[in-house]
Image 1 (spheres, rainbow, N blue to C red):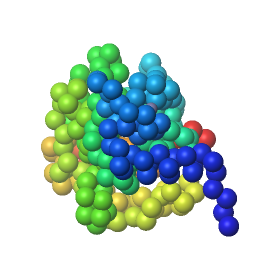
Image 2 (cartoon, protein in one colour; image 1 turned 90 degrees about the horizontal axis):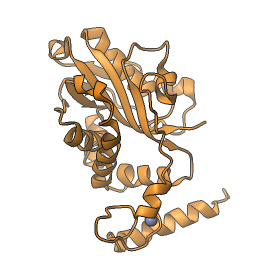
Image 3 (cartoon, protein in one colour; image 1 turned 135 degrees about the vertical axis):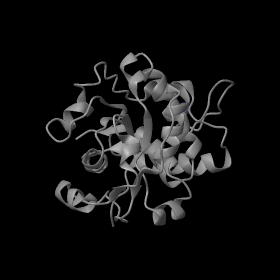
Image 4 (cartoon, protein in one colour; image 1 turned 180 degrees about the vertical axis):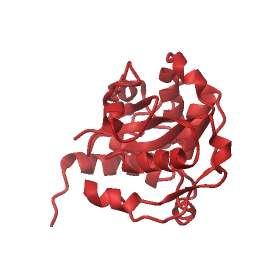
Length: 238
Ligand SMILES: [Zn+2]
């Protein structure tokens, strides 16, 4: 039988406790005090922020060099397996906690505000889910992150121009080349002229190989003469 790590057992236990005590910290289960939301101040400060100072050459940007033309690329947190960040992603992706996605989007965007360069963004575009996955989950977590980001940057969200036309299997158990094959031709553009001469910020929850967000960007660039920037809540660490 596959061995379950101690960390995993703690995560499962904390998730279980959170079901009954939603006003407790998602990570450590301590009761939240006034002003805290989802996470206590202690767990919040422990989150591994990327603190990418230059949005053109940080670790997120380096992942896309030579693959697609982009203006800025950044992520809020670093992500490792069996970490607190994985636990947060799990909560907003699989356990229905879309308000957490919104909260993290807002927090990330507050850090982005110091980059005046982002003022040029015209539309925020969350990576779309296929309607089958959307009906299973009930919401698109990338859209809730985007709502949080949009509320701080004061930019409109566009969810109708880039659409997902192919349902793909889960990416999590695939290697890099399989992931690449899996995401080809999954997106389409409904009315390209809408994005012409616009600066589009594409948002996803996690960047692992970057294949999904890269294909989303390529789909837009194929049809419209747009400028692309990329943002994720978490960048996977290898
Ligand atoms: Zn905590």
